[in-house]
Each structure stands twice: as C-alpha cells, then as structure tokens.
Image (cartoon, rainbow, N blue to C red; front, side, top):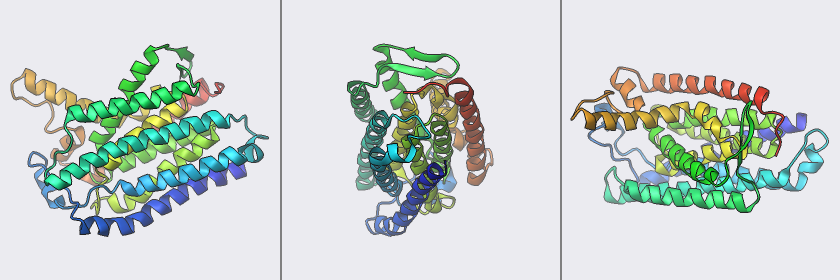
Length: 348
C-alpha cells in the first residue's frame, strides 16, 4: 500500500511539475509567434480584454501527461508483478492496452485541435475547421480507437454498477463512437472561462484515480494521477486572469483523455455523472439553437454554453469555476460510491 501511494503521488507530482515548467517557456514562445486568441464579437463584451492571449497552451499538459504515462506504464509492465502482485490481482497486459490506446485517442484528438487552432491563428479569426470536418475526423479517430480495443480482445461488454457486465454486441461500437465524439466536443465547449475546463477535468481525473484504485487498476490509477497533476500544472498559468488558453489543442485532447479513462475502467456509463458539467454545457448549446429556431429568434438562455449564461447573470469567472468544480466533485463522490458498492468485485 505504501509503494502504491508513492507510485500514484509521484505520477501526479511529476506531471504537475512538467506541465508548470513547460508553461514557463511555452507562453513567451507563443507570444513571440503571435499565436493569440481572437475573441468573437458575439461573446461577452468584457472578454475583449482577453484578445491576444496565447492559445495552444494545452501543449504543456499534453507533454506532461504523455511523458509520465509512458514512463509509469513501462515501469508497471516490467516491474508491476514484483511491486504489487502480492497485494493486488493484476492484469498488466490489458491495462497497458487501454492506457496506450487511450493515450493515442487523446493525442489524435489533440492533433485535430492543433490543426483547428493553427487555422485560427493563420487566418486571424475565431473560426478554424468546419463542424463537418471536425466530426469526420473525430469519428475516424474514435473508430480506430475502438478497432484497436476490439482487435486486442477487449470485447464488447461494458460494466454497469449494480447491474454487472452487459454485452452490447456490435451495437457497442456504434454507441461508443457516438459517446466518444459527444464527450470530446462537450469538453471542448466547456473551455470558455479562465480555469474552467482544467478545473473540471482535474476533479474528473481525481475521481477516476480513486475509482481505478478501488478496482485494483494500478496502471490506470497512475494514468489518472498524471492527468490530474498536469491539469493543476496548467492551471498555474490558466487560472483567472489567464496568461494562456488551452485552445482546441488542449480541450479536444482532454476530451479524448476523459473518454480514455472511462473506457479503461470499462464503465463509460460513468461519463453521465462525472461529465455532468460537460453535458450541461453541450446540451445548453443544443437547446439554445433549437429554441432559437423554433421561436424565430427567442433565446432560452442569455448566452450559451451555460457558463456564459451565468456570466451574463453577474457571476464572476472565479465563482463559475468554483461552483462547477464543486458540482463535479460531488458527482465524483457519488460515482466512487456507485463503483465501490456496485462494481468493485468485477475484474478484467
């Protein structure tokens, strides 16, 4: 247990340090390249003050998570049995499959985001890839990820707390692809207030860290800890007032990472409670657009995504981050309890 605690702590601290240190060098470099954010006129007027803030800051936590994940996973593969097998039932090979495939999913989405950000910077406008272009690329990435899992023998079963293992057959791949693309874009939509996306994802990652620990997924626990630590390192530079934005490079990467963690514990259904803020952000946009069209110009919210509605209602950015993070933390506790009492006995 002591070795396990040190293992997890080191993954989080190393990821935090790398993310924060990379930011110290990355932000001046982005300024030098004039990779600044262009603020839309339809957004809150006070956001114009953020014009020119560097984007693509997500590179700092991408570097940190990738490095720590590769190091910790290779150590786990070669030394996991010696370090932990006497105390915990391990399936190192299957964990490694989920970790490497999940990292690939996140990185591929990050590349899509990078292309989008680069297009915005070059054209000096807050529009990058078109929605259809993004969706085609995202479904392609999701399909490759699911194919890798399928070819690796991970199967088509999913675990639902208190219900056990459910085999969805071929429908598993269709549903999973839709879930992955939906969550990735929901996380992307959450990135609109200083520190919000990083803070929410920090609490989601901590929740998955505790959940995977309860399930004896020790490699995935370190994976989750790396995500949590790297998000904190990014928040050193992104918390209000932000010195850098993660951009689509970062938000799409985090979306892929959140999905990777959920699939790694074989419980994508946990994205419902843990991703409650992401989902509210996404559905607020869908409802706003739908209501606007149905009523020929009326709005359901003052502005969407929902964090902008609260901004327009007088909430400060710090308050929005605090409240949304608290909601995520509460649902994180609920998710942990659901797994602890309803699915802890299920192994790979």
